[in-house]
Image: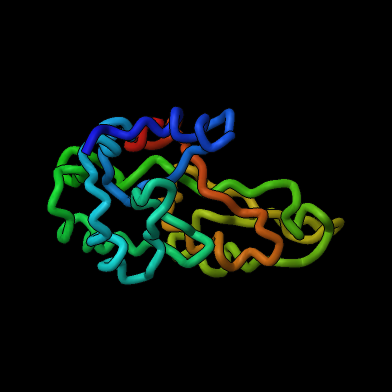
Length: 172
């Protein structure tokens, strides 16, 4: 099967800009990933939390709206192709949680749901007697599991690439 160029695919579908997707953890850089992945679906079927889905063109991608990644490495183990590199990468990916201004805390509404599910306590809250707690993400501590994304009642939490504090894994 010939390699797929995601930017060309986006253009042909009428999207002028290719949207960055999150590949499964420990994926090799995007260009090599789309050249080597056969879209067999083994990683999609094996994902214990069902967050790996068949995305655009059938390529696996992570959808944190469905849950979190536990970094179980099952996707790596079942994949018949060399699209994962666990050994040389310090972290599974370079994605961390980001919280937009639509967050309830920033709107003056008490909510700490993202922080309550963060097992590694990467989301902390600033307290002040004058306003409700506001979240802050410690990007150095965040492992990018995505547990905070699904539970946000206003979809204010997203996973974005943070090359400043993490090893770059998915080059788009």
